[in-house]
Length: 97
Image (cartoon, rainbow, N blue to C red; front, side):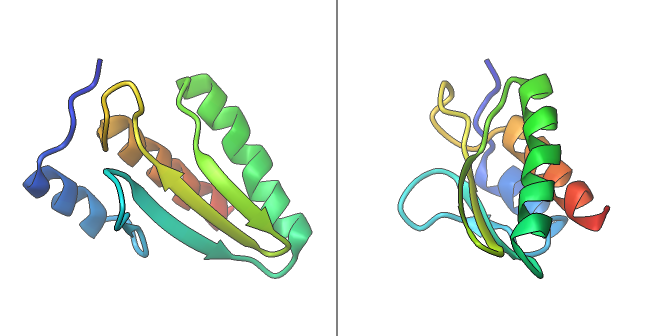
């Protein structure tokens, strides 16, 4: 099982992930993405779904039209781990495509 990141590790990782932040109410990271339309938002979700499935690490997400809110936490570890950082990096890469 991956270990929960300590405060310094978490801060260092978030410094490389623009717009990602610690959730206020739990040990998780979050970001809201804004796209031009639903098709663009859904396209990113489709790309990430394949990546997340391959990692066996699945995001919590909420999509309304062009907005996608993502929350990442490693549930079996009880907080943010390197798996969440890797998936956040995958989100950033998918958005740049």
